[in-house]
Length: 229
Image (cartoon, rainbow, N blue to C red; front, side):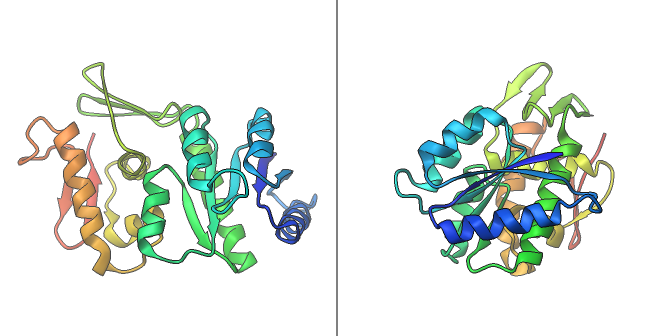
């Protein structure tokens, strides 16, 4: 059973989501959810003692911004986080994802889409739990969110680690630009591929022995990227 924390100051949204998730978690469903709720940041921090697997976090809370709360959560907990917000700009999405959010969905949202995004986040959460992947002289600990090169820790941003994790979970397989853009930024078209190229370059500078001649993260021209062993 997965534990989900709902943090939104709108009681009608909290009630709707709690009822929807509990109904979705009926015995005939393979997805079982135990729901906790909070109406502000203070209550959310108290409820973190339950070690939720996933948090649905409103960006606009009455006592602390969702952005600040997200940074606190990601610094101390391994919970997946989906941001909920009326903000619909790419810059805002990228800011949240760079701060460690696993996904971002706009209000008002379609319940079916939200449930699908929850399933994806929890699937990634489960796949990464206690999973360690090696690539050349790198060790990628998906559970601890730790990357080491020759036993030396490499500091990655939340977005850099998210991209590396996606490639690691599909090691040796081609991961298309579209798939990475959709998974990391929620962006669906290649016109935003410049975001991806920037982060791939950052990763290569940190991970490759010679970033100009990459041997770990390989580009498949016009298609995507591949993490080699």
